[in-house]
Length: 247
Image (cartoon, rainbow, N blue to C red; front, top):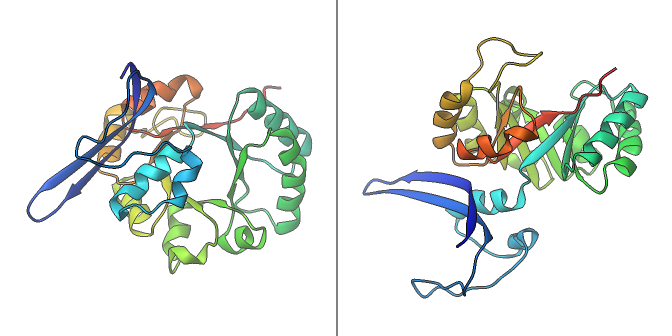
């Protein structure tokens, strides 16, 4: 191995033992990969991992391998001029996932925003922050909920899409996300921002909370793409960043 970065750490505590799955993303290596315990090996693209059967304990690892290291967040969807400028900026900054934050917007407003957004984000996956019924009606493959909205869901199966993310702020909400079968979560606020200037977590508390989680977690709040490496060293999948246009 010549170069690697942390991907995810998952703790499993059983009655007779504790197991730590410490997973790294290898970005450069030489030689031939080997299954030290005789495991069969096969090289596949991350998106193809969903075609294989894995133990339940490995599912968060598969999710982490498929998720990006940064998600851009776009809000105020009724201001179409601002929406388009943010979408263009998201594409320039290279976001492969973009969240459209529209928790209070109706179907017509959301459809209009999506129609303006999709041609501008360069094929990035669209993550909707809206209600479960509306996400299902729009055929969304990725949905982002607040912890309170997740709590009101009877089961994970109420959302028909592949990816379910949850906005969390403490250990209890992170555990709720795990228990409800969420694919990933965000944890905020990490650093001071215009939205949250007080009661931020800081990196140490963020790390301690993420270390106990068993799904990929994004750092959020006061962060930009410059913080990706720092976030990953603290156990995060990466960062969520609000896309803002000056002026």
